[in-house]
Length: 153
Image 1 (cartoon, rainbow, N blue to C red):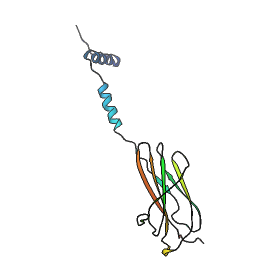
Image 2 (tube, helix red, strand yellow):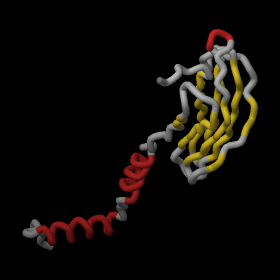
Image 3 (spheres, rainbow, N blue to C red):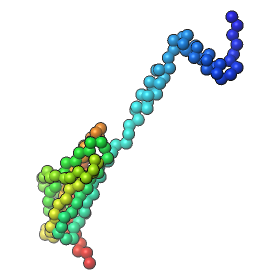
Image 4 (tube, rainbow, N blue to C red):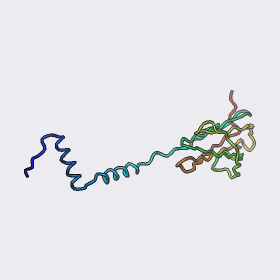
């Protein structure tokens, strides 16, 4: 039997395919290792954002908003009033409150706040939100609203 080298690309492909079938080789392990390698790449984690006023100059309703862009986002809201101006320095207990879902990924909490300049103007109203969702660990953010903001001209 006489063998000759393939002269065209089609002949080369046919020769390789024949050898694979004859030798019982499979390219599946190659594809599986590539799939595992691709599966090792993790998507970026979602980040909870919280917005709201940092100070108030008048009595009124103030709204805090939270966003967490993951499927099945869930928000749990807390609030407290403190004699200090920062979240870290306050030791008051957080009180569970209720927010309103505004979309699949956002929620808001509205509260009537009264301007209060007692205690050297350091009093604050603080809001915390815990957010969770599909495939993401719970994240927490908090914001302090100074109750004695500068009076606007």
